[in-house]
Length: 205
Image (cartoon, rainbow, N blue to C red; front, top):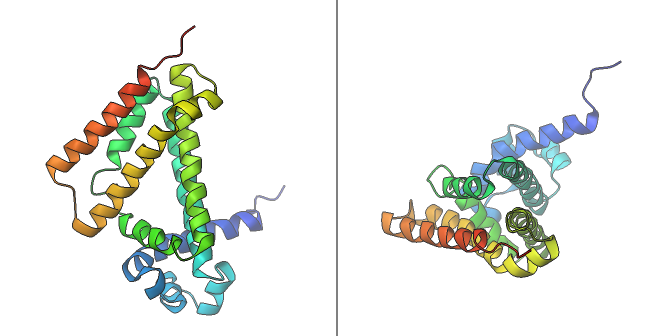
């Protein structure tokens, strides 16, 4: 039996390598400022070969959303498997608020700006946020002993607020640097209030 990797898997791995190598250039020069030549150079490949993997900058953003979402899904799987999922969720969320966790803030600021002008990027960003909200809902449904439909109706606003906090803090850190202790304390207080509110809202019966 051949042990050679499947061609699709090899191409997928190569695409991931390219995205990793161009993230910084994309973030620093911006969606409009970074040319395909700039990005190909950052990836160490010819422009023609680069176009074989990503025919447009919109395709690059869509792929970045997909890979980042795959990482987030892995993180949520670990949270769901934790002994105390809500404590694990809190820990993972707060880890995203430190300087290292905010390293992609400039990139997501550029994607947010591009989403206003490019419908396909806006849709990729929306789908990513929707998937994260669904994953949060899954955890909250389990913790509060509700089915997904009821949990979604009950906690959708809280889920969206948590996603917005992480995104806003990442973008703010990219623009102004790490949050002040006062701001960080306020953000943590909001996260704690939301998680405590949900944890205490156990379904009757």
